[in-house]
Amino acid sequence: ERPLEFTMRFESFADYWDPFLAGQGPAGAYLRSAGGDRREALRREVKRRLALRSENEPFSVGARAWAARGVRREDTAPSRVCVKTCNRG
Image 1 (cartoon, one colour):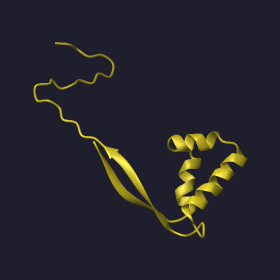
Image 2: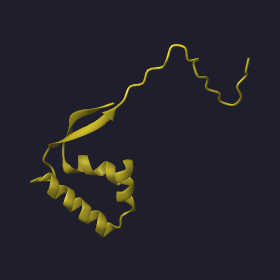
Image 3: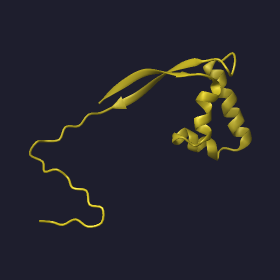
């Protein structure tokens, strides 16, 4: 397990914000459940923290994702996927 750090580039504030309005991820689900006044207050606060001079200005933010790698032991039998029934034998 280790972090993967990278830069995300956005063409505008809408490029960053609009996926949240569609309910993408936990933050988007929260945003969709927030009332209009709360949603607008969050929007203003995010813009303030990003220190954007213009909504149409491209910008970048640092991001981090966690990666893990698993290894299957050689002596483990392969798993079987059964859609309806699985014949054993």
